[in-house]
Length: 63
Image (spheres, rainbow, N blue to C red):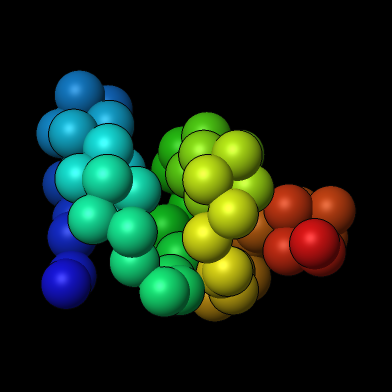
């Protein structure tokens, strides 16, 4: 599954909800905007992830 928020926070939230409800096994987050919300949601739902973004804060990438 590949999703994009297209810089639309509402659309990004729908995609995030969809990915966590489908119990994905892992994720690659490649977006600078909203990465904090995405990381927090994946942590709450115990979804393994990596952040592939040069602007992502270091603490967001650490488990």
